[in-house]
Image (cartoon, rainbow, N blue to C red; front, side, top):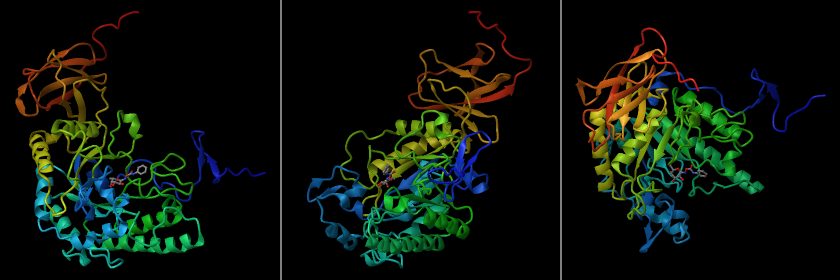
Length: 467
Ligand SMILES: C[C@@H]1O/C(=N\OC(=O)Nc2ccccc2)[C@@H](O)[C@H](O)[C@@H]1O
């Protein structure tokens, strides 16, 4: 007698776990090992750009503030949908300057940028031939994506294209497929989606990846086979293309991780406005965290409310992400006229100031595998033993505790900003040390470099307490 599990054939796995044989699950276990993904892994810091028609109202309509995220204002019952949709006739960003945007990202120290090509409202920042709802039919008329991609490429900042599958403007979009009519309409929508994605990859061949969004509704979750085939087609068209875990579900509707718990896509995209706390939380996968400056505003909002993150907070988020093997991506929401708001320009300048001195501890660094200490975060240079201590909390003692692996000692340590000034390191026990700071009134985060040595002899100098 054959016993079929509810959703798929199962096979005994080497470790005894019941592994489902999936047709549309993940096609790879473990991290990608190619050079394109290795470069992505080392980016450290990125920029997100949310820009579109929603930047024109900026979270306000007829003097009333929309309480949600500004880029979702079309979903507010305070605006007739057709009225929002006619914003296309007001899209004329006279202060848009692609070189300025790219220069701001360069100043901040971003190594990659994710730019909205089309958000949930369906308005395309490129002249797509598959819909009229594009820049081509706005007063602006011109392609926005090409000058942006060219400007970022010129700055050496890699471009990832954000694409919302959910498209409120397209007549074929459905939240779920319940009737025959839904099914027919959604088949047309799927072809439209495929056409636009192949169009983007063809028009902008230097784009390194696609950042998918709007893929949580049942209509798309039910398209495991179609999405799987489309992902394969896009990867064939653009070898090395980076696609995250948010694009598609497996045949059981599992998103981000398939029914066997294996990551879908090339990196985990679930870290939206949240950061893992410990290395176990990332399950050995690549990942990045995308973060807003206010609590939850991606598109431009005239009136930022609540807590606005400070430079030091954002630097600490960057350090924490890199210390746990990920990248940190900070969102910018340019104004409807195309200018970047002054608060974001200030943040870019201040973060950039710090990165100018300390980026060695961020770029091409990874999880150091050391016990977290209260003073801040460890990172390790990929392919080297060099360790960095990114210090946010200087202890009153001025002594930074470090626990190294057995048979490792500290060769030398110094402030990254003052490499000639060696710091006094004191061995507490076989693997524990204090790094004694000369100046404990830093006032802003700083980096201590540790150059470890293989330890002569073995183990502890002092016997463990007999308890
Ligand atoms: C980066 C952000 O991504 C989004 N949504 O991300 C989600 O993950 N949404 C979500 C998460 C859990 C359940 C349902 C939706 C968008 O709606 C938002 O406007 C912004 O572009």
